[in-house]
Image (cartoon, rainbow, N blue to C red):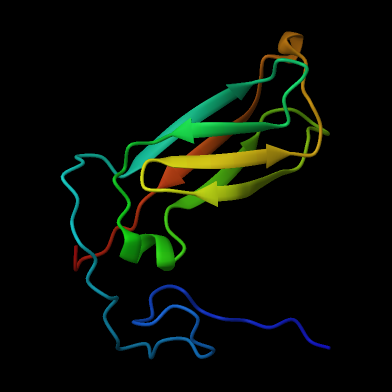
Length: 122
């Protein structure tokens, strides 16, 4: 069985199995009143926790959530650190899980960057 591919962005209806044509403009999303488009959150472990909820306050709309926004990237700061994944996304928060705990003595072990959609049509 092959891995299935579906597109959430920049298509008009999330879940489409074909990408948009190269001459299609991205869908217009509702513009929020937030004056910034990205949050960078360095994480320091406590030696016990394997998940964290990060408040980003980007005011992601319901439409943007269905298009798989916000975008979440991980920038590991230590070699061999725990694997990270997104557990859930909401209007103003993202919950992230980790495969292992990290001791406080390690310091910052990853930076989480959370971004909302940015297009010429916003």
